[in-house]
Image (tube, rainbow, N blue to C red; front, side):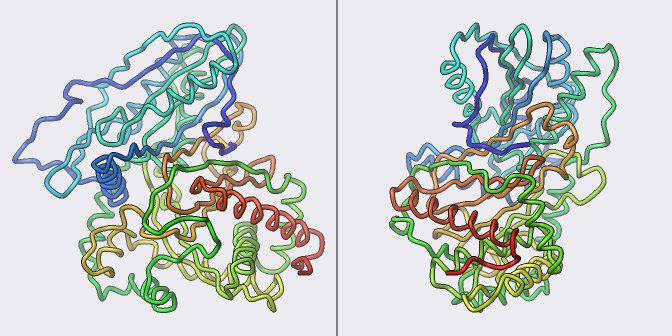
Length: 470
């Protein structure tokens, strides 16, 4: 699975088909006073509030996560449509209807049997440029506030078919995309062969959201689960959010159009060598990438401590591993990166920081913000250019053994930003980076210089186990 900006998606021309989800009552399920609708998760509530507030300010904000994969040979259209319907019926989050309920966001789930797909034949597209522009526009067709929250399509050719889909970020996280691609590909193969799909049990997202809400309600300002955040804020000048220390050429409080870029950092053999160095020093690949990146940021920004917030997958093992939804919490890390430290010392700090945050995974980030920030309700738009780091090993996600053969891709897209976000991801071909950042000349130069320094740093560590000489 390779993560790319949607602008980098490439698909050969063909015949375009589109599917959207329809269901009785999807325009607004009736209220039942005896059975109040469940509330959306904290992340969903916050994401919806961001979209609503920006829409009110006449900012056309959008944020979606998409995916694609290839089917070889002539397409069995009936089997593909059955596989897409199977996907929506299998994952309750794809059948959710959202509506505002006072200050909260309520959610209802359409029963599987009531879900149908509506197909539109968009006709023949004859050029590669036309196909790329069409698919980009189609995948961007989700809407946080009104729906559709999921769109699905295919570019059909005689010898192959590209299948693609997108979910508004209200529904899903990054790990949901490999789940969706695996489910549709496996279901298609089964239906094309005249049999029913057999897939692992998929955990439901609403149970996760309800459990998260219960934990949040039971968490007060003196709860021990807040200790990690409190200590972090105390060492960060009283702020919950760590500031990205490099110049992005922005004005505080201003939202900018987002640039979206992808870089390959290390091929698989060099990444293996880098990982071997990290393991010899008591770390692993994830903590090694964090250490190298933190050192590069810290030394470029003149800071002796690297601080960042990290999204953390909360699925665990079992049925939720195969579920679609927004199974993510956010936690802070910090570790020393002063220039007098060698790589082994920085790696030990990064590794320890990752271990130190894990006991606090059950404290929902938005609830933490509410409890520890006076006079504010939820983070909504980040109040500053935060320091953000994400690492995902796609080789550990469902369907990983077939992702390369299926040419599986995931696309993360956000229309606006007021900072810079780094999504590091590993697959069978190596280590890659997707960056979304404010589209300013200074931010482009800062990001390019940082990526260049990071590549040189990891190459040197892979060869010698040490940072490059300054």
